[in-house]
Image (cartoon, rainbow, N blue to C red; front, side, top):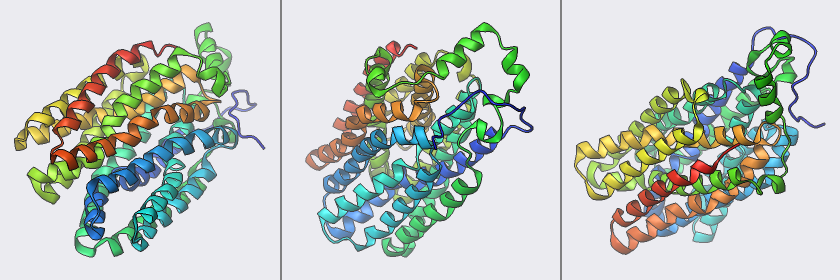
Length: 419
C-alpha cells in the first residue's frame, strides 16, 4: 500500500499532531547527528592511532561513508516517497549501531572501508532526508519554523554527544566507547520511530499546518496555487531538466563539501592549539551556535526569499574558514568556530527548504536523493582533500583557502534556484 501524501480528507483535526512529529524528528536527529555526523571527528584520531594508519587513510573511509550516503539516498528516495520513512528509520538505526560496534573488530584497511560502507546505509536512513521529508509533508506555510525546531536536535546532538563520546573514548577506550554509542543509536531511534512517527497528516485525519476543513475551503487563490504546486509529482528525469535542480545541487556541493571537511577535521585542527578537551569544547560551541542560528532563522525564513538567506549563510561560512586559515589566536579560533556554527545548521536546513519550495511534497525524497547524489563529490572528497593536503604539508591552510573559495562561488550559483 502506497503512503503517498494526500491533502483531501473527510474530517477536521482535533489537536495538530505535526508538532509531535517535529519533536520525534528532533530526538532522532539528536542521536543520528551527534554520533553519525559530528562523531567522525572524535573517532578519527583514536582510530588512526589504534591501528597506525595515516590521517589520509582514515579520512578516505569517511569520504567513502559520505560518498555512499549520497548513492544510498538516490536509491531509496523513491521508496521513501512511496512507503514513508518510518521503517527506514527503524532498520537504519540497527544497521548503523551494529556497524559502529563492529569497528572494534577490524584489523585491516579493507575491513575499515567495509564497515563504513555498511554504516553509510544506516546513517542515510536515519538522518536529514527522512526527517525533513516528514516535516515537508506535515507543514507548508510553517515549514521553515517546524524544520528549524526539528533540525535543532542535530545541533543539540553535537553539544551533548561529542563531549560524551570524547569522555568515553578517553576513559574507556574504543573497545567500550563504540559499543555504548552504537547501543545508544538503536535504543533511542527505534522506539521513537515506532511509537511517535506518523507518515503524513491524513494518517491522523488532519491537514498540513493544522488547518481544518474550513481553512482549506476558504483559502484564497494564492494559497490554492501554492498547494497545487506543492502537490505536483516530479520524476527524476523531469527534475534534472530544471535550472532550480542544478542550482541547488551545485551550491550545496560546494558549500557542504567544505563544511563537512571542516567538521571532520575540526577536532584535529583545533587540537593543535586548544588540546583534545578544548577542541571538543569548540565542537560543542559550534553546535550551540548552530542551535541559535537555526532557531533565529526559523522565526522569519518562511517570509523571505530562501535564495538570499542561503547567500548570507555561505558568505559567513567562507569568511570564518578563510580567517581560520591564517590566524590561530585562541580568541579568533573560538569566534570563528561560533560564526561557522551559526550558518552550519542553517545551510543544511536551507537545502531541504529550497527543495520543498521548488519541488513540493510527493517527490521530496526522490528529488532530495537525486540532489544528494550530485552533492556527493563535495561531501565525499572534501574530508579526504583536507587529509591529503595535511599529510603533504602538515597544515590545513591550503584546504581551508580552497573551501572558502568554494563557499564564495556558491553565493552566485544559488541565485538561479527559482520555482
